[in-house]
Length: 430
Image 1: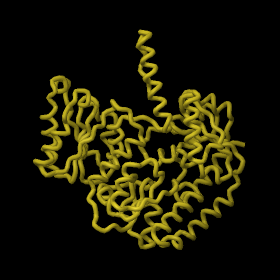
Image 2 (image 1 turned 60 degrees about the horizontal axis):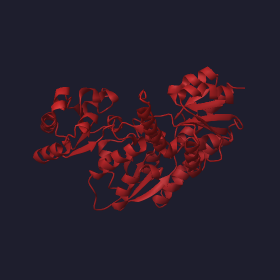
Image 3 (image 1 turned 135 degrees about the vertical axis):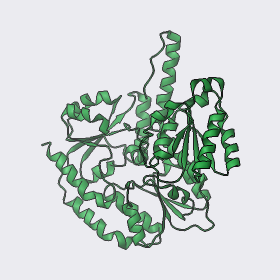
Image 4 (image 1 turned 120 degrees about the horizontal axis):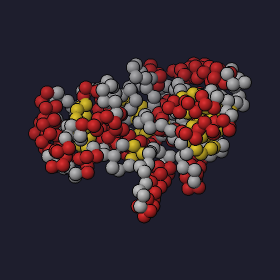
């Protein structure tokens, strides 16, 4: 989060400094990153296939905080494109009404999500009332959301809020059956490994969310009997909603590495009354053999966390530590590189968060920002570093082989390739 310049007035400068320190402490308590909620919601929805619509209610530049021209549902995004004069005079209701009426008449989507932005929040625009009236008049469900950047929200909080909002508007079922997968990686096209295996075992997979999900997946989320979720702590609102509807929640690990996948499929097997054990046995054995044949033990690896504003679940679950077990089970000596404020309070917060995840024993180094990485990497002389791709220049400057954060493929099908990749990268550092 970039700070604006402090005031030249000493009193105001001190007040500014206190404000930004509070925001940094708030961020550090959860090891999360603050985000502009409207951009986060837009990034999360623009690639979801389906016949829905999103209206960005604000001035024309509000759509430039996300790639509004790409994504499989880019054509379903609209903007009221309010002018400065309309905002100054508070004449925002008519443009919003006109936009919503046109969408309802020409597209007739099953739902319209209306995102209120900073300018309409500043003027106190009662756009919720307009949305409710147009929805009642047209018969098209419309959901307003206050998504301005005036209130700092972590990526985790934003995603949970968005997913809960979608789930609240999905139809309930009189009889629950089948399984939801929540937070498990999915390919952009096709189905993931657990979906394939569950279907082979005769289990009905209702929805695989959120990555790779379609609008139909979201509309089916309340119909399953069981939801298997990665990092339950990340989705309290949506999981509470599903539990209140009678679903059973099963927490599973982020499926990177052999042991994490073993735990994933054991959890799914138990949740499906033993339907899965025989289906995954051969693939588990092959992955274990690949792990035992790997010879990279004892090499030092630095893993940087808290560097991504990705709005992607796989980068946020388990505080960004989801790949660490895969490095550890390969016999590597892992050290954590934590982007954050180097002060005692922040260090205590980081230590507590790591202890809660079972990684408090790992050596760690705190650095204030990407600019400080080259010196840290030169000092530590790692055999390999895993960092955000946007900071790959730091690894190049320090002459350290690197992997982009998230480079390890999930599931059993990714184990052998991951181990080959690690061996090749480490082989260049003798």
